[in-house]
Length: 409
Length: 230
Image 1 (cartoon, rainbow over the protein chains, first blue to last red):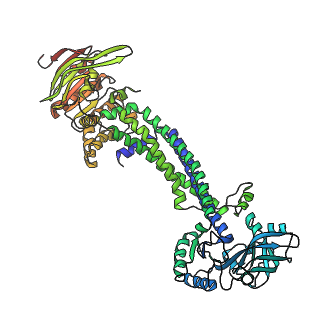
Image 2 (image 1 turned 90 degrees about the horizontal axis):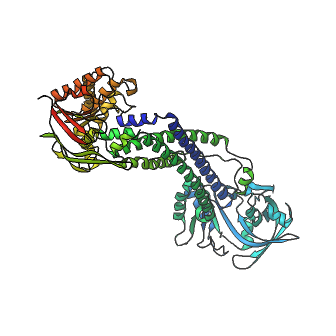
């Protein structure tokens, strides 16, 4: 082993308690970072999946402008044929046609304005978790049945239950008056108040008849096997669109900009906290190295008198920090990885979390996801922060005079 | 060519409200292969002169020349390089690196000099044998006696065959037998390797080994005796 490396290593163990305390601080913060980042990223994936699979899907094909202005006449023509093409060419099963209209829904006592969706009973359950969230009754199975599924909050507001009839009043695609009576076949409870209050679903065939959609629809909803595949499938679907159709393919980020913003906001606040943690560790390292440099002032004077430059001594101090940082990083990643692994099998929860999670359509236990990024990103930042913090003690050596240093006790 | 030439050196330290003249218009010349003792009572200026010659301290005025090179105007880096390549230091308190073994202490300077691993091993083994420390190469300073530590310090100072060795009270912490052994080693190195020695001491036994004795008092040279001639 190189003598400088040996010297750096042995210097660390001159004060083993101090070195262990500093490495301990690194290990603690690194393990915490590994676990928190793994938990956070696991939670984000879950949050994205749950939110998107509730209704939006990962990708939607729409008419241009429909996303921002939900006009009835902005449709995808020959929508069923295009959906079949997409299923066949991409190999994806989870593809469903959906249409939407705003309507006044009335029970015997009350009326509310809601967004009524026409959903394909055969495919809707593959792109949306709503059919699976039907608490009372069932989701329609016949595409032409005059049935409707509403949210639990809307049912409460309308004072209706399964088997009751609702009247729908709205405008058809051609601007005509659209009216129908549908029997409540099911009531869903997604846990998301907005969905449960403002959404109703009817079979697509029935919707097309009532709102005069003919063979058109408002969206083809696609769910990909996982989030990382979205961009590839988006491009593939784009290439399948009829030439000159002007149709657009949106990914989940465009469809649910609020979701990404919420994640980014959460990340920002979390990274602020992580930043504070890294700064605290960096100060701890700086304190250790400063003490170490101060108590070795006499020795540094000696080696300078032997011909060592301050730069070389500074590099020695940095090398000591690198060794300490590497030990902290590896042990921290190991401890954090082990904790993360345990929770990734057993899940993580705390009192009151189930209620909070339900607000975001999340399960009551989170499962952290350990990846190379979550294992080493945090510890690497702590490592770099430690090296940076050691530059001050290392730089101090540049102002050291051998004679004065040798006089130090 | 002179190994060392000092011209009209002055150095003043401030201690509290007082200015202390550590060097007061000191001029001297030491020939190559010289063996010189600087003798002075405590505070007489011998360590300051030694530090000025070694480039560890910069005089307020005057010139210092080592091996034909003026050094009092050199940069920190150039001075470090000069000390590394041409000057060996031996201190009163041995000043070994405590976490390194005897061999590693000797090899450390050579590594900085860029000597290969094999070269370092060969030279350190030879020099430690020469200073009588064969078999103790792997001991750390704390596991060695004062005399043994000082021998390691000497080995470290001379392993790269510097032209000049500066020793500041090298025997101050040694018993008389060990002091004699150390001085005999210095004499041998001076005679066989042609190394110039400048030793600051107030030990009369050490002065007895010197070819030339320079006496200082209050920062001035008060006597310069050629002991061989005497």
